[in-house]
Image 1 (tube, helix red, strand yellow):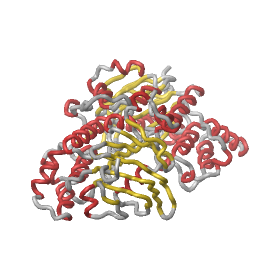
Image 2: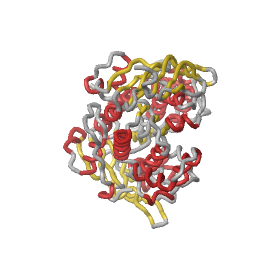
Image 3: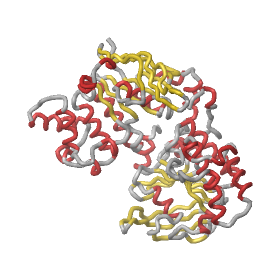
Image 4: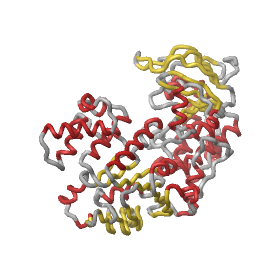
Length: 248
Length: 275
């Protein structure tokens, strides 16, 4: 699979914070329209890989290609058009003093895109929020509603790639089910590529095609989600993780 | 005789629309067994744990009766209550990073928990701390006792918390989401540890969690709460035969390891007039 064909392609990527290397030798390819997961314990470097891809962790070396174009060492406009991120905690990732309308309009204003009014309405409808939420503040909404706003914000620029950093771990199970359904539907409707970070293997089973198991800053195994059905992991660490998650 | 019996427990907080019962008429009895209380956020499960220990401060109000070993906890003075907290009933909190004292070594903190309730010579005290750290399977107790909270990992921190809570040898342990801040690989260890200690010491356990499958694995009996009320009470082994639609909804909404469903079933929240 060529790096120009894939949505996300990493070749031997190392990432450091302040000179300390935390992630080493990451290599994987995510095809366009694929849903790929990074799984592992906290501190294994999953989120760091996401940050490197979207330019938030500038100290990386190696090769990153996003939709055929070389990766950037800082966030920039063209990167933002192609690739958007949804963060873990909807309580922390929305500006407390901005209404939903302001949060959703901002990316349009920055990129000089017109027709804000219809686009905001459409985005709210897409994520299953009633239009009365448009002029609310984050504190006037529940966790699930906020995460819908965060997803709507990421979709405003119609990116092809979505980076999802534990999008449901701060939510209750019933709300988690709604958000997972929403993510699955959006991907089917728009042909999005997902790179999902999670420590919850059943979510991978529901939402993803393949996964990379990470441990101590390295990818120890890349497996298909069907491995979650039959436990056909080869690396001892993946097997242990699978067993600890309740897999047989 | 029951270790703990809770009758018609109500916890209410004032809102602009009048007082709201966050726990609304909860009753249960607990012997030397493991009881799981499950519910989503806002269901009142943590408030139940706190109300038992009388940790709810004004403007919150608690009504009802809580009997512990035949003593009505709500009739005790604050001073008498303090001899129960920690010594007879203790509570493990969610996140060790916030619940441990950052400026005290782990050993001193555990020792303090013991010193408040028992007078022991210094040497005996040290021995008890050491023994307790070994009981929670910390390999190098002497070294770990010298560490500060930021120097231990999440799993180790939670073990330290458990050691601290169990060292006065309580009869009842309330564990409020003891593993939600931990990685999956460590969760199992911590729960098995709590389980072993509870069995060895003949204690009662109330495990409060939002994770239904996890609670089913480690408890004998389960109460499912929604909007301050118990909607279902059953043996853990009978959970798959649950009858209440809320319990069924909760069970179905969890993604499975062998997931083949195209879409997860979603609950209609309006049905239960919840939060």
